[in-house]
Length: 212
Length: 266
Image 1 (cartoon, one colour):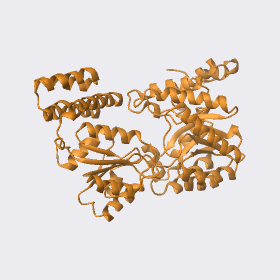
Image 2: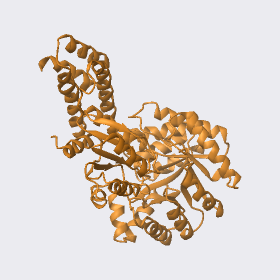
Image 3: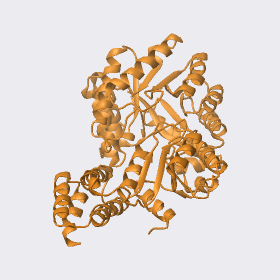
Image 4: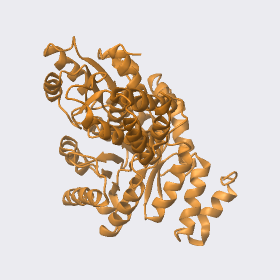
């Protein structure tokens, strides 16, 4: 554990060079891949999320840490055998139909990836039908929907209904977010969860998956 | 600088509550304070209501103009709400906004060309948000071309370059600033407008960032801004910048606001 301390520090700082070097060092020392991933990298991103939630760090620092983690994952990923990495859950994420805003959605995707979820990012302006189709194809545990305009918010309940109609609502949880979206709206449209920002999206996704 | 007062927006809790309880006095007071502080237009936005936006927006128009002689900036991405609000507006409103997004464009173009109005042209393309200067200028050119074809004079078109957060990409500030300058040069007589708060998303001390962004945008020829005119420090930055850029003959406005006691603490 202690040998991963400096890797964690480097990810927290967003120091790509140092973090990649620490990852290699850990590999050379024979540290288990899963341990590097879970304790070094995901552990660090967990701390990043906590600090962000407390207002101690800000969006650029969060992005920098996420990017650093990604570089480290690129180092260890080829060493995993096929199917060896078990994600915390599979997430399909999209900005809903009629809405082109992607910044918040991208932040959420990045933080979820950092937390060990497998992310399928469908992009912006995605129809309920396309979301259902990809959710089925991926076998997603969670569908995460973003909307930045009150006029595109109704695409959220439309997507929930489409998932219901496809008969996959039972195994797929829905979480929603975006500036005009509220907790109350999530309840109204029978979404399972609402997250106001990227860090809370991770906490909510873990809660939905039954991981603390 | 043309100042559009941004405070009557139902995403602000006090405004939302006032709209729900139909507190006309509070709304009029909020409008009046902004006019007194230098706003040429009062923005009205009821977008936080998923249901009933149209009805609430119309009430805001009638409430503000029932008490004050001021043009409004009708702020909604919803063509239906804008159409109804326009019918109730006296004089020439500013319509905020049209973009290249297909449905919005198709429904708003006949609306903005059917009666005299000022129109904000948001640099949003059909499929994405622009990131580079060139993308912004391309969308702006297409919008200006199409609005001009419909007989809307350039002086009534306000291009919004779509400001994005520097927290996500540190080049976003310069990209919007350079787009403003290029659009002003490319279409003489046109206006450019933007909000100030997007640029500071995800960062601490946002008002400081917003204020400095306003100064930079003015130096890049921005001609209108949607902001809180009751923020004394922000307006002090605006008046002093206008003067420094040679747009305040005999430093008249600057001295006026000083003598009115509105530069204290700035």
